[in-house]
Image (cartoon, rainbow, N blue to C red; front, side, top):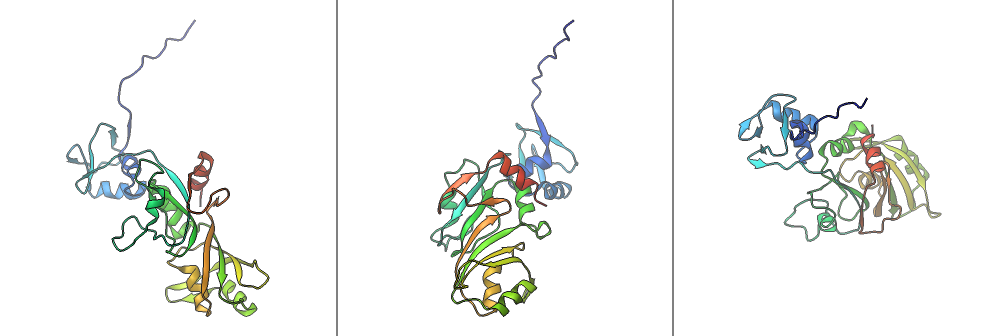
Length: 247
């Protein structure tokens, strides 16, 4: 005997309000909960502060007077060239990284972290606020590997001192691993899990070295394999899952 088939429902799909806000690229889901609790989010013109509140795609959701659009999450990896500033908008910058990914997708995406103007290598863009927060928060200690070219050979004493930890103006800076890659001791591979501003350059400058070239060759589980300088690609579903699993 055949089981009776369920009648199709025309009820619009609903998602939690905090997920809707996070998908719009405003912030992480946890931060969205705070915005909701503080009465910062409106649904169809009314303030909603109820946790677990669900909305439909046809509902109008507003934050700071602007209508939010819950978007499909996009994850784009760029091999950044020199001379581009990592910012979404800078009236004083001639070239920003946003120019390089403007044709990647219809959604608005944002850089995850920063690379300074002269630093090259991997830079991730996404509109997934929750994952971006996870990848940049110090507690997750996301792995970053750089290839560093110095203006002069590094001495054994300085090499050992850097591995022990360096006291900078804004606190201790720890290098997790370091290796000499060139015979002249000017090219190094550096693994670091902290993400403070210009941290790699400042570590070597502390010991009197000038970083001539700095290239990020690995970010979290992502590498530059088959990604030419100045080009971008979309992450595979497997790579996305790997990022979401970063601890």
